[in-house]
Image 1 (cartoon, chains in turn green, orange):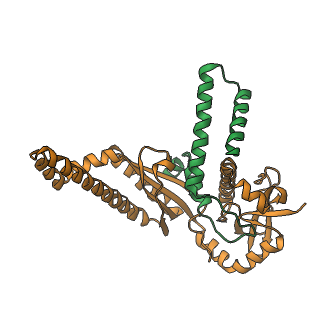
Image 2 (tube, rainbow over the protein chains, first blue to last red; image 1 turned 45 degrees about the vertical axis):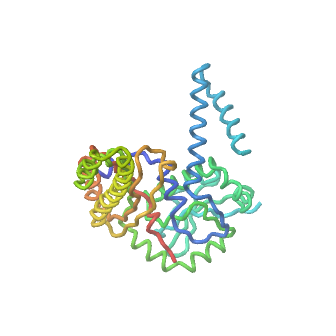
Image 3 (tube, each protein chain N blue to C red; image 1 turned 30 degrees about the vertical axis):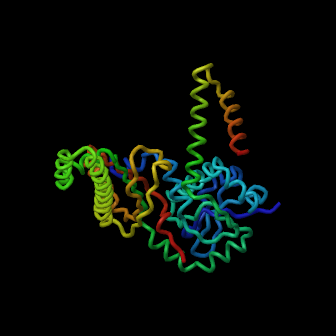
Length: 85
Length: 267
């Protein structure tokens, strides 16, 4: 396999994507000017959210068996809470 | 209901072109990707509803991190798909026009620049590199190999307890400085080697550990524009570096090929 194929198939992390799409790309002004918080802030927020979901899943596994329905319910609750904050 | 134009990027118009992206769903999950021809250039876009992507709505949505994550992923995925088929000038996330006329005006005023840029980017790929380093391991190595530090440590061992404390703190600070110097020198030396296979490169800011979520420290973050026939050499260097220095705590992460996010600059 060529080096190119090896690297091409590697998984790309969230940070790599945010580091490019939010940070770079041609910034010709569109009609809509939106401002997105700095990448580090976006990323930090996401990490908090992701680990909160992971903890939730973990604690559920410990108690009763995890159904996807239950998970969705929990996730929805969580989203609800985080959106309010 | 008003329809807006979400612009992914610009590509070169092909003869008798049909839309090769009509299978792809746009950022709202409903409208398909579409092409608009403007002479030599074609815009890859999708329609979005104003209710969902109007300025005020967007303002609010970009504060919802899950939304930003999902849509940023989508934006990237589409650009990758387009990039597989054509050289593209990638637009920044959420570049939106209110009318076709406005989009046309933007293209008109940058037409020649974009045509030239597409020619420059043709046959080249963007590759990104992040170097991480195990700081403890590096500190150990620096302490072992730096004669000044070795000597100083021996001296400290002979001192009284009070002075030992002060001098130890001083030497620790000195080691920290040396470690940072070593990180910078090592990385920039490697960067220079990669640069030889690139036609353009840019060095970016390092993210701290809170952001990367890694134990190792990011000490280099850069992007390269590499001609297709040099990509193998370029990546071979990374693989070799990983083999040679992985043991000593260095991690090399090369990702790509990306659309030329870092090298598509228009004034």
